[in-house]
Length: 370
Length: 253
Image (cartoon, rainbow over all chains, first blue to last red; front, side, top):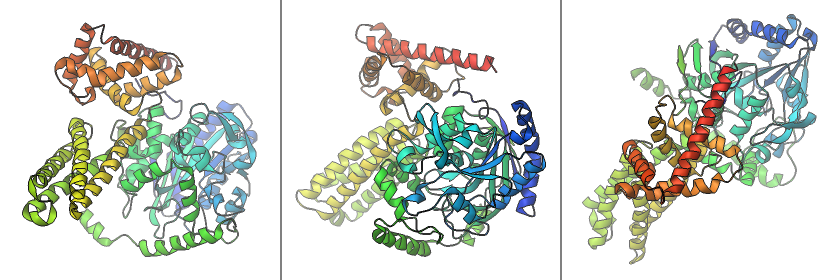
C-alpha cells in the first residue's frame, strides 16, 4: 500500500544538475538535457489550444527579496527567468506570466506589491506579465486542511506551471526548493495567520497547493546559493554553487536538492508531507552529486524550536517584524510601533554583523582528511 | 544514479529527542562520576545523597541506551524518561530540604530538560506523521499493531508505518461511531492486554512475538477484550478497503 498516487509527483523521475561557464549557459544546457521544450510542446499539444493562448505561468522566488543584489542568494535570478521566457517566446508561446503573492514582510514595510518588488530586483515585464496573486483572489476548494479558501486566478487557470525556485537553507525546514516555493502562490499576505499555527501547518499548505494545482516543471537556481541560519532571507557570504537543477517532477527535484546539502531530505517537513501524500518514488540523478562545499546547514535545535514556536501566531508575527532588519528604501516601515520594532531591527543588524563570518578553511581540511 | 526515496526514516524531532537524551545521559553519568570523586562538594551528604548520585548514573546509562535507538530501544527510552522525572523530583526535594544549592540546581536542570524531552517526544509523533484520527499515543500503538497484523496476513511488502498512516487517514474521513470504540480498544490494548502474558508493560514497548501472543490471548477472552477485537475488525476492514482502492487506482492508470 502506498500514499495516494498523484499523476505528476508519484511517477519516477530524473533530476538534472547542470553546471556551465555562465549561468545562462547552464540554464540552456539544463533545459536541453531535461528536454524541457519537448515536455512543454507535448503538454501544449494535449491542451488542444492555440500556442498564443496556451498560458504558461512561472513562479520564481521574488518576495523574499529585501534589497537588490548582484547574484543574490535569496531570490531567483531575474536574468535566468527572463532567458527562460525568451526561449519559450521564440517557440511561439506568448501568453506568459510570472506570479507571486505578498508575504510577511508586509508586517514591517509598506508598498511591497509584487510588481514593486519585481521591479526592484530587475524584472522588466517585457514580453510577459507580472501578476500579484494577492490582488486577484477567487474562491477555491482545496479540500484537506485549507478547505474552501482563495487562489490567485492566474495560477489556477494556468495551462503549464513552472516553479523556478532558489537554492537556500531555511530555518523552519532545513531548506527550501520548488515545493516550498509554491507556498508563495497562496494568496493571503498574512501567511502566519492563514497558513501556520494550530490545526494547519505551512508544509501541509505547500504540499496541498502543489497537489491541487500541479506544477509541471521545476527549475532550481543554484548558481548562487544561500546557506546558514538565515539563508532564506539573507546571507552575508553567498555560496557560488554554479548549478541549475531541472526536472519534470518537483518532488524528485526537491529531494535531490536536500541530498546536495548533505541532509536527509525526509527531515524537511515539506518533503515529509509530500512523502505522506505521494509516496516514495525512484529518482535518477544526472550530474555532480558531491554535496556543496563550503556549506552550512541549519541545526536541528533551531528547526525543532521554530516548529514549536510557529504554533503561536503573535510570537511568529512579532519576530517576523522584529527580524526584518533590511529593506530597500522605497519600501517605508509600517509606522505603528515602529519606535519599538526599529530598536529590534537595529539590534538584529548589529547581531548579524557579530555572528556572521565566512566558512573556515579548517573544515575543508578535516573533510578531505575524512 | 537511481535510488528510491527512503520514506520511513526518523523525523527531525525524533532525531532531536535522541540527541537530547544522549546529551543529558552523558551529563548525568559525568556528574555522577564527578560527585563520587568530590562527594562533599557536589551532592548532599548521607544515604539519600548517595542514592541520588547512584540513580543519576543509572538513569544516565538508561537514557544513553534509549538514545541509541529512539524507535528500536523505545522501552529503554520510556523507562529513562519516567525515571528522569522521578530523579528530577528527588533532586529538587533533596535540594530544598535542607537547602543545598547544587542539589537544587541539578533538580531544576533535570526538571526543565525532562519537560523539554516529554514535549519533544510528543511533538515528534505529531510532526512526523501528523495523525488526523488517532491521538499521538494511539498512533504509536497502531504502528505496533500494524506490525503484528501485516505479518499475520502475510502482506510483508507493507510497512507498518504506512499502514498506520493510511488507516489513520481513512478513519479520519469517516464521521461514524467507531471513534469511541477505537479509543476504548486502544486503551485496553496498550495498558491492560499485556497482563495476559504476565508483562505489565505498555503494548508498544513489547517485541513483535510478544505482541502477537497478546492478540492471540485476547482473542480467546472475547468478553473482556471485546473492544480490542472490535478495533482489529475495524482496522482490518479499513486496511482492506485501502488496498482495494489502491488496486483500483493502479488499474486505472
